[in-house]
Image (cartoon, rainbow, N blue to C red; front, side, top):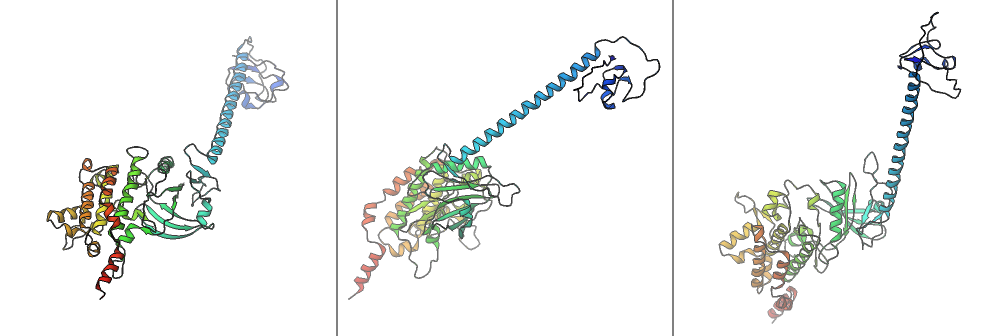
Length: 445
């Protein structure tokens, strides 16, 4: 309790002594302030009502001093907190700008980020994502160039659609547009960085660049002219077709095994391909194979009903939905049987029977001791002296598709077993054309 002294402070612009148990008359020097400055007190005089004729007189004490001090201290503390908050915001903004600048220039893991204008696929806010190239890549284009390129659909798989993109500079690349990516940006980038660190190998298709945004996930690869093993092995089996001869098939198996063994030897023991199948084996003009689509399985949604993929999957992968190096070995074994038999990984025996996977069909034939019935008729028709070699390779395939993962060999052992299949005799044996020429000469009188 107390009264308000005549402060006589001409510079005082704001005053609020509300609810401080003050009484008596408002000094003349403070009557210029509004009523809200004096609420909750027993005061009179302008701007409040007039004072009574005989005001109650009380002895003043130090209450008013405490009130004024509290107002001043409280205001100072508020200003100090506001200043601290402003300073923290400025520091964070500056650090973010510096971090963004450093990411554009380079990164410690060998990636080179080429800056370009913001890209958005219908998103309300443009995302500042860039096309990320890996070290050693000689391409010199950006996302806008890629989006302007003329595109041709190469195929649609369980993980997305592949396009052949011809850029204005005369460069041709393959762009894979992913669908159903189930991880966030950080995990996606970490997995792609792992794929990029696998390095160069003649039997592995290298990932050259990637792009991630909310609406688009793109991968960039080299374009390989001939196409996939699936299209060449199974395409148009009619009269006049030139089938893959045994030498070529063994070459493809050997190169694919080497590429997969190289993948398993990099990074760590848990790193695997996760999606080995004939459509992911790309062939050069001289039929040198390259394994593509490396490392996508961990970031993609597991297909619920993938008819062209499930036949390659190991039993434990179908149950646990997680790929391992041993499941890669199983998938390679299915691919090997596919090359030997000429049959798709899933087949229907007919007569209303259930669909049977290729390893089970091969086992059923071998149980009846009809080994020759396993092999592709195109091989048996044109090659009479390679059945022993095909049996050796068949044994490798059956070891790879063992039902127990622990019973399967490692890929480095698979490479050794394939390379031991009498390569010296095979390379000296006449090719299919030479055999045909000799047969033709023999028939000439």
